[in-house]
Image (cartoon, rainbow, N blue to C red; front, side):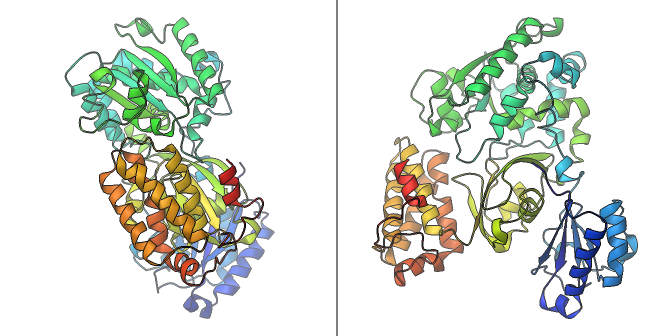
Length: 555
């Protein structure tokens, strides 16, 4: 995907406009075109800057540098030095005296341009995924060799912990700490599991990693096995990922043939074996304990926790479960060190994140960007803006069970800390952008229809809650609901979050609760005014051919 390398924002609040922000914007437009940067630099405006000093402001991403006050006469030198040559203009920067924390989205970001920031995907699309020789020519197995030759398991775990790597499966738990739990847990044998059951709708990052760089996951799992004292590992692959399964099988076979997997790896007193296990299409098996049950040959149902897998996992033994993307970060960290990894992302959330971009943007697909990038940057730099110059209504972050973030919060940094303060979560990294043509009731109904089908039915709160929530949303969309139904929705969601047995039931009501929080007026308009502002909901009429509701019903 071709991405803009920079984005420029001009403050356009009433004070900035009074001080000439429009002239600054037009001059930027002219100079960007004159320097031949139109295909490389995105230009936009921003209203809510949370600052009254140094206006009008010009903010340049991805460096998150604020210039101000900027006059039209300053624009030529700003474009020439910063946008053309990559040099920050200190004189213009010195004119901006407002405290940095007044501009909420200017975080402590580190690293190079987002479009150049590849750690996990550094080899995808470059090496032949079926060739061990190709992998070796691009630093392959250097990390494992370093570990076995120079590091003890304790030193390895300390290095991973020092890097600040957090789990990329959604929870963001510190990886080094999880490894230490398994390493210190009593009992043998111990196991390493790679969770590659990527069944979250809209998420395909793990598939790209597995298909494009399968040897990196084999190497990472072997390193993890050495760290925690395991000699056996399993990769649980989503059943529909046939190509990924085949490439992993080929990678395992080639690594074994070269002495990089199996007995006495690199001639050392260390054995590690990897087996593949294909899932059968159950969404619930993405939950780690259900996945473990499935590997054991049982029906994939979540276990009650505690105990957790680090102490009671596969066949009751200590088990390390890591996501594909988490493991893909391990070899680069080992090769280049924890300090290097801290150069990317933010102070508290190091490294990069792989995101999938979906919805009403001009360019969809897969990107890797540093933690701390904002939703606005993703839209304008990678998504090439909203389709048909539409206005962003909301973003769903993290897949079908992810949080809903309204358009006026699009300057929220995408990192665990910032989203947590907002009451949201990063989840799997799927980003669904919706413009104002989308109905929040229709969206919530589609999501809940998915969850009521995928519920494993083990616990009542999820089994009954998803069904009842879907029925209420259907009544709202068909003009058959009362305002009291909104209280029931709120209560159902709160109960599911508190007493459901696993993460599916706890997360399923999140988008519905967020919609009630941010878009309650639109939901109430359906009920009180008997009207869907977007015209999508049937409201007592036959469902239009080709509508989202009908397409979902047919599927």
